Length: 167
Image (tube, rainbow, N blue to C red):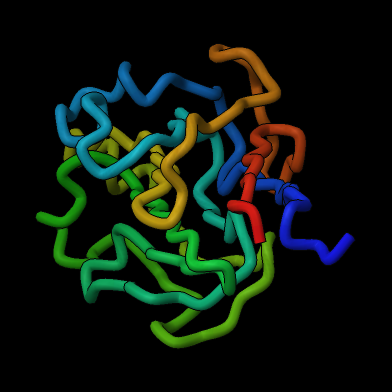
């Protein structure tokens, strides 16, 4: 057999970018995320303030506001980690970034910290969304039930299966 009829199957794990309670994207109090306008994914109600990389890849976006970070894998899958709702209006206040656009990062690398007390004072919802924005158009398969506690870097929190076309 020459291989052109073989179907390749690749799997990669996506870790929780923060510890907290796993939440449906549809329950996020922002229609852009809840209606999956940017893509499928999941949300976490955080009980920690450190955000780590859910996947390995290159940082393709990190706005000056530091409220979100975009990562692209070498396979072209793009993931956005968005911290909180209406956090863009904070203009970076309450956030510390530990990476820069263009950096190669590994899954689990520390990316951003946010100040939960500051967010609380400002009335900010700190829900952290992990969205597959490009390169992945299948349903995201979670290995835990919504409402479950997840730990930062917990590999079992989400697995994405990618099926390539026939070669």
